[in-house]
Length: 224
Image (cartoon, rainbow, N blue to C red; front, side):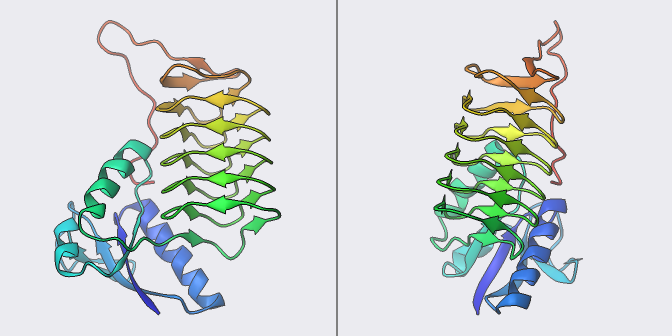
C-alpha cells in the first residue's frame, strides 16, 4: 500500500478520507497517514486520522503521495504549487461507484466522488474535483482546477477553462464554453457561452453585478 496524506482537514478533506476507505475496501491501495492543515493543531484527530502538520511536513517526507482536498479551484491551485516544491507524488482518486462508460482521460490529482457518471471521450484535467452524483456528457473538457459541486449536470461538448467552479445543482447545456475563473451559483443554468470571468447566477445564468461597495460574491463553503 502507498502512503497518502490529504491536504485539508475540512469537510471535503474528510469526504476524501472516506472515499479512500471505500477504495481500500475494494482493493487495498492507500495507507492514509493523516491530514496536513495549517488551521488545526498537530496531533488533533479528524475522523480517526491525525493532523500531521502543515505543508512543511513534506520537506521531510517527499516520497509520500498527496491529494488536495480543498474545494475552491484557485485556492487549490495555490496549494498545489506549494506542494510541487516539496513532493512529486500525486494521487488520483476515483470512487468505486463511479461509472465511466467510454474512452476518458483523468489528470493527476483529480478526485471523482461517489455516484458520478462520465460517458465517452471526456478529458478531465489535473486537480479537478467532481463531487457527489455529477454527470459529465460526451466530449466534454474540464481543464485543471475545475470544481463540480454535488449534483452538477454537464451536457456533451462543453469546455470549461481552468478554475471554473460549478455550484451545487448547476446545469450546462450542450456545446457551451466557459472561460477561466468563473463561479456558477448553486442551481444556475448555463444556456450560452460565458467569456468573461466573474460570478454567474440564476436561470438562465447571468453575471452578478457588484454594487458600489464591492457587492457580495457567491462562494461555496470553504469546508467543501
